[in-house]
Image (cartoon, rainbow, N blue to C red; front, side):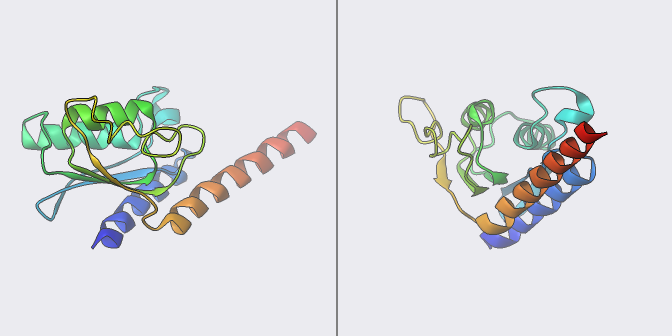
Length: 156
């Protein structure tokens, strides 16, 4: 079942890619039902906080009419950053499943693990590496094309 939910997050990531956004997608599931889905929109909105996870959390809160997402599960194609990890903790999401690890900003086990840190009053269980190859390839392909585009631009 985890792969099915992650496939939906990958669909969201592909929507971001179509908008020339970093291809990251997120889906929030509660009681076996998708309650929110989103993708990165930082470039589109020129707003640093429009990460896929934050947009999905906002959507889920609006849908449920509460900021407490207890029992919810988040599926995201890239390991959450510090900002998103904070929002995950504060929204009380129970479990986080991510695809690719983020060696530069990952706060769900790579650089640190904010989500399972018992110094906070809430923790989220973390499972990394769900469909990591597919999620990682989306990102690698995006950045490969971006570097090529920038290199071509410099030559002109």
